[in-house]
Length: 402
Image (cartoon, rainbow, N blue to C red; front, side, top):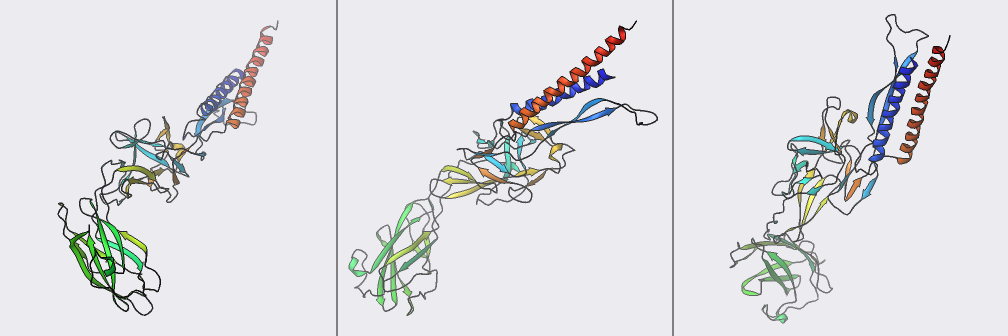
């Protein structure tokens, strides 16, 4: 009987050493989760049931259990490296075959898909043409390299102070600075993305009353105004905002510009003229110049025109029983009946962890503990080998009896 017990012990120690060796060999593997061997004792079956003198017949391996604890987060210089801080798995698609991984080392392939080193596509929610992400069934995430189309200016927002101490000048002539009190300019964009300079001139007409004129691209034919701006005796603007749209005819093939200006918050105080806010909603075309990923998985593109646009959102998947997942190699797991159905959602929501861009999750292997486990497995193997040797000596003694 001791031979069988010793052999089962040798086999168990070898299996335990296999698990430890695999952990040690993957100590530097990104997203790797360690495993531990679990054993159970074995008793011979008995028709009449067990008794107080029942002796075990050895040990067997019951499971190799993966340990899904958090690994350390390590910073990289690649914005497409993504670490999960918390629960969840990346959802990958390889020609329709769905797998799951904690390894967030991604890149963009020649077709614009976000893929891992094995070519599996990262999945998530895509944004529509307006950059709005609508959650639906996860699809392969793609980073479009197409230029961002230009947006014609339709509105401007200006905050300024007009000097109440100014006097009323002569009749307005934009080429003569003595005929207006103050001026500023802002850049507008047409439907083709061409930039135009809109010059604004402010001329005092009476106490607490001003007239605004505008010229586009220093072209006298584009002059508009006067448009009245009125203030009360505390210097607050009383004219309703925004003003009626200013219309400019263009001859470069673009649609005519129609721009509504909002001077809300502007003042007329006894201090020098100054502009503290000058914005407009147009922009020229832009090329993709960079990517960033937010903690909730939003993949945002940055463009050469200073604009940004949401391109998609990475999704994470969790399971009721992660230990039921099947290891497939390549830092990937597959769904099984034991793992339960995948629970898909946005990062940093529910029980799912947050994402960290330009970072990776290191292996959760504790090398010190694994080296101790390796010594323990070695001692177990030696002890079981010694039990076989002792049984052999006992049998030899029995054979030598006369």
